[in-house]
Image (cartoon, rainbow, N blue to C red; front, side, top):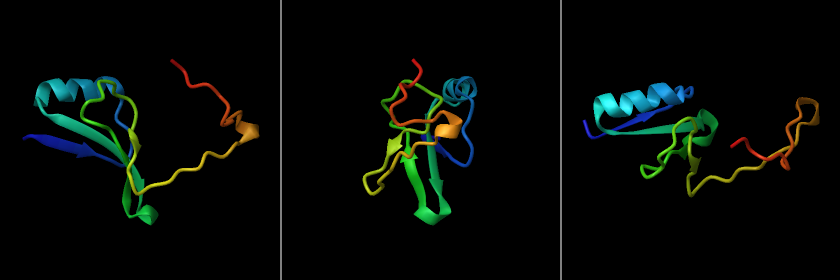
Length: 80
């Protein structure tokens, strides 16, 4: 096995790191919707961090929308 891609729901970062060690191959985590023709984001093989679904693919455009009642604002700083 040389490469794997996961989708649907996120894998816990600790589990993903363990799978990378056990299977000794690249594992990419992606996200998408059926309405967007499936993949919208995917992790880069050079990204050492797990626990996210990567950046948008070249053909995808995202828009951040504020949801004040959930305290989600585009101006929020991400956690370290």
